[in-house]
Amino acid sequence: MGKSPVDMTTTDTLQPTRPRQGRDRIAVLFTCIGRRVSLLHCFARAARKLRLPACFCGTDTTSLSPALQLCDEAFLVKPTTHARYISQLLSIVRERDIRLLIPTVDLDLPLLARNKSRFERLGCRVLVSNPEAIDICRDKRRTFGFLTRHGFGTPETLSVRTTLATDRKRKLAWPRFLKRWDGYAGRDNAVVRTPAELRWHARRIPNAICQELMEGTEYTCDVYIDFDMRVRCVVPRRRIEVRSGEVSKGQTAKHPRIMDESRRLAEALGAGPGVVTLQLFLTKRNQIKFIEINPRFGGGVPLSIRAGADFPRWILQELTGKRPRIGFDKFQDGLVMLRYDAEVWLEPSDAKGTRL
Image (tube, rainbow, N blue to C red; front, side, top):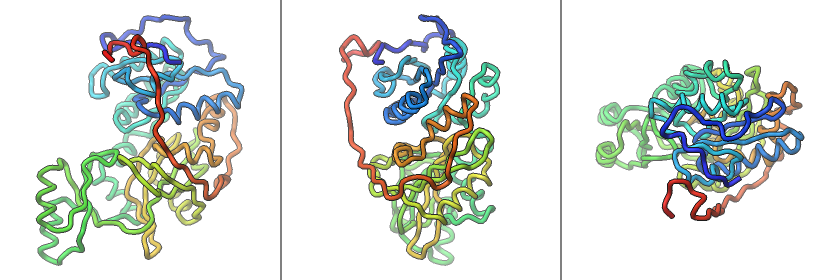
């Protein structure tokens, strides 16, 4: 680990630097791996427990990616918006015999969903939902429509113009919550206390929608959907503290009603395989209000894994044709995670193409 990344930004073809992986060695590729050091370590630990020879690869657009430096093989690729992004991934999959591709952020989910069959023809399973489910999750206007159609609690969601017009007619409750319908990681979110504040923030935040402000206890639920598209486990995590849109302090909570509603939501969406992350509030009136659906691993998933919902182990077992034993609620209740920053050290020559 810690080798200089292979730079693919100037070509769609990977020039092999070592023999192709044998089929007795499982190669896994994480895309946009960024800071997902804990997730990488969880998969490596699961492979060791299973005594499964594995090679963990990662992609990013910069060599100054902490998790990329810790992969067995690292690749620099074009941004997800570039026309050659998918062809570069396909080249890595082909030359390194990648058996499993795991997206870690929202950026490339639509592309991977639309091109899933191209990876499967190379013998690579992609942990991504179907394009329709991805679109519902990414467009928060569609998320609201999906949730209300299927009878799930969710905050009222309106356009800025409709919010202002409705307030003139029937005086809405303030404050309200403003965010982008295509946003992610808590970017451009704002609490607005008056119509005037709403107008000001709406000029600054593109593609804004306005929701009623939720009060209560916020939870994230990690939902595991197996390779047969069955919901097998749901782990609610109470969000004690959040930093930059990602949980920094959390606690597992066996809440049967939240778990049942989360299972019902994942089944209605047809999401999976893999882990889908749901965000919700349990209000002071004991109502469950879903606010986000992220069809990928969430940043706080190491807490669920540590509590006994060993998603990496189950995924690797299924990938190798085994049937893992999974209990829907067989995880440790009340386990607390307190996250902190750690360091990855590079010698000047290790970060390819970067002046340090």
